[in-house]
Length: 424
Ligand code: ADP
Ligand code: ASP
Ligand code: MG
Image (cartoon, rainbow, N blue to C red; front, side, top):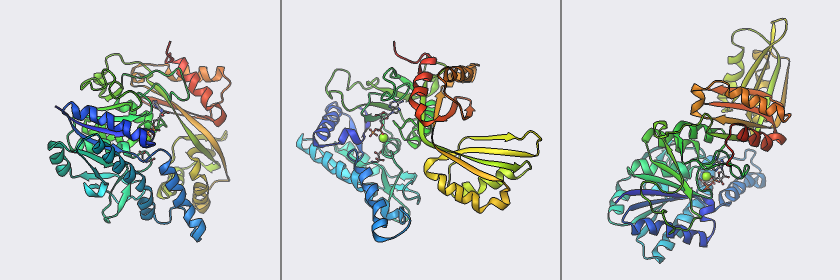
C-alpha cells in the first residue's frame, strides 16, 4: 500500500465526462488499496475567463489598473478550482468512493502575501492524512491557499502543479502523479514538433530549465519543490484508458519520471529544446562606459519588478561609449521604458529603442557540462536556415538564443533535429 497524490490539469477536467474519467483513474488507485489525495485545476479555459472578467471590471467602473486589488483578483480566479473539486467529489461518491472536497483555506495551505503569485509556506497535512488513513479520498482545489491576511491567495498561472507537489511533500506521499493532456515530458513541445520523443526520465535540473525557459508542462515552482523535497514526480496522461494494463504500476507507471541525475543511466548531451514567446528587446544607445552604469539601469528595473533576462553590452570603437541591450517580457516593455525615462539623467544614455515579438529558444542538457561544441552546432544549424541571432546567453546546462518571432517554429525544429532528438 502506498500514499499517492494525483493532480489533474484543466483539459483533464474540462467537462463532466472528463471528470468522470478522472474519477475512474482515482478509483483504480483506491481499489488497489492506496491512500489517495487528488488535486484539481479549473476546467480548461475557466481561469482565462475569470482573469478576463477581473481585467474587464476596472474598465467598466473606471479604475485604471487591471489588477487594482490583487486580493479580489484572487477571490475571483480561485473559484474555478472550487467548482472542479466539488464536482469530482460528487463523481467519486457516484462510484461509491468515500471522498471529500477541500479548498486551500480548509486544509490550510498557508502562503505568503504575494496575491496573484503567492508562494506556499506551510501545509498542515494532519487532517487529510488522518482521513486518508480512514479510507477517505481528499479532493483538493489546486492553485490556491490562505495568505497571512486570512484571504485566498493564488499561486500564479499553472500553480496547481505546485499545489500537488507541495501536498505530496506535506503528506510524505510515495509518488506525485501530474496527469495532463500529453503522456509525459517530451524532448520539446510535441504540439510544435511531431518528431519529439517522450523521455522516460528527466533530471530535476533539466526540468527546471525546461520549465523556466518556456515548456509549460510543469510550473517552475513545482519542479523546485519536487527537487528540494525529493518528491517522486511523474508526468502522465489522463487520456489513456484508466484500466489499461500497466496504468496502476506502483514503481513504473507510464509517463516521465522527474528524478536525480544519478538515476539516469544514459545521459544524452542535449535533453530538450524549449521556447518562450513574447520576449522584447530594449537597447540603450551611447551610454558612458564607467562603473555604476549597469547598476543605474537594472536597479530601478528590479525595484519595479521587471524581470530582465538576456543582457548584451557592446563597447563602441573609441571605447568611450557603450550600448546595452537586454530582454524583458513583451508585457513589461511600456513599464520598462517609463522607468528608464525617469532615470535618464542618472543612467546617462542617448536614445532607447525597443523591439517586441521576439522568441527565445533554448537548448538544455546536463551532458553539456562535459561536452564542447554544443553551442557551435546550434549556431551553424540556425545559420543554414537563414535565422538571425539577436542575443545569446549560456549557462552550464543551457544555451538560449533570441530570434525574430516568425522563425520560432523553424528554429525549434532545426535545433531538435541537429542534436539528433527526432524520433526515427
Ligand atoms: P494542464 O492543463 O494539464 O496543466 P498544460 O497545458 O499546463 O496542462 O501543460 C501541458 C502542455 O504542455 C502540453 O499540452 C504541451 O503542449 C505543453 N508542453 C510544452 N513543452 C512540453 C514538453 N517538453 N513536453 C510535454 N509537453 C509540453
Ligand atoms: N487554473 C490555473 C491556471 O489556469 C492553475 C492551473 O491550471 O494549474 O493557471
Ligand atoms: Mg499546467
